[in-house]
Amino acid sequence: MTFKTTIPPKHQWVKTDDGSFTLFSEAFQETCHSSTGAKAETLFNYIVGCQIKEQLNTRKALSVLEVGFGLGIGFLMTYDELLHSSYPWKFLSLEIDQALLEWFRLEYKDHPFLKNLKWNGSILEAKTENIHLIILGGDARKTLPAFLDKNIQEIDAIYQDAFSPKKNPILWTTEWFELLKKYSNPGVILSTYSSSSSIRKSLLEAGWILNKGPQFGAKRASTRATLQGTSNPDILIQLKNSPTLALRDDNF
Ligand SMILES: C[S@@+](CC[C@H](N)C(=O)[O-])C[C@H]1O[C@@H](n2cnc3c(N)ncnc32)[C@H](O)[C@@H]1O
Image (cartoon, rainbow, N blue to C red; front, side):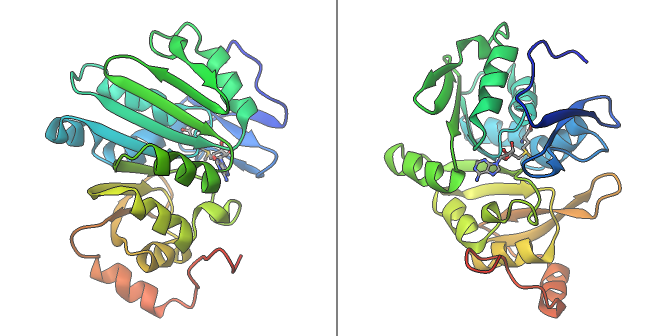
């Protein structure tokens, strides 16, 4: 194991099949990534799934939103992917567990970019000429609207990476996806590992257009959602025939 700093209590390291590590959270009784590979899954679902390099090159600026900072693999892999780009990009992430964020700050205090990380109240932030990382500590349902109502910006890519809908339903409801839509650019790509009918129904109810992402490892196909185009007809038929209800704030 190559980590220098002790992880906060109630978390355990778990090695995944690609050799990278993820964390098991006792609070949520779940690991942050699938056992197939924490890094491989991140690359597949988010870096490739949201087409971030292509989007940055086309837009000449990029604003990424990550739902669940966890141990920071989403940010670190985005950083590696965009390292040689000359366009500016912003990475806004959401994390309820502030002890995890403090672990991350200490662990990466020698990193060329992350050495700039500083607490500003409950926000952990680092900025250089082209890269701006902002992690909002606290419950995303409150921190995201409070922050974006004050700091208006449109999101181009969303890594929807909360714990599973069963363990972390508050970040998968119709109301949550309505919020994400409100702050998104019309050309946004939302990508998630989940293919559950309930979250697809929530996305649809919130006005998102649904497409299948490819299959990763042993998991079923993932989900890509946009605000332009048309939904995959097979998904629509499957959802129509499924008795599962959309997740809503008042039904879990
Ligand atoms: C699956 S992990 C994210 C993994 C992360 N993307 C990475 O690459 O390491 C989900 C994270 O969401 C956080 N979380 C759960 N509920 C939350 C909430 N209501 N607001 C903000 N973060 C939350 C958890 O603490 C956990 O760290």
